[in-house]
Image (cartoon, rainbow, N blue to C red):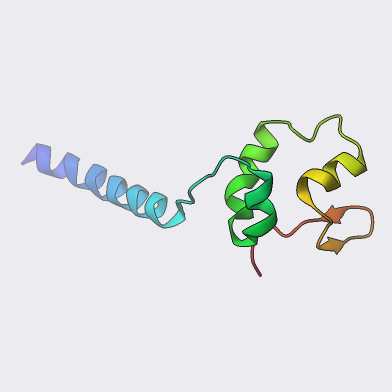
Length: 86
């Protein structure tokens, strides 16, 4: 009986953590410029790889535009490219 009393909270916590992980899972894709340009709904899946690969570091505005395309929005000081289809 002692095992059941100790195991029950552990089981519940495990199930809750598994549930939250399952509903928040987002698949990641490797960055591909062609896919970025044509599949705007998949951009958020490539964003992490784009950041982690540091492919944009050291590039000027023209090179970034050539890779990612023209920005969808212009902010006050920052260009914003839709990463999520809104």
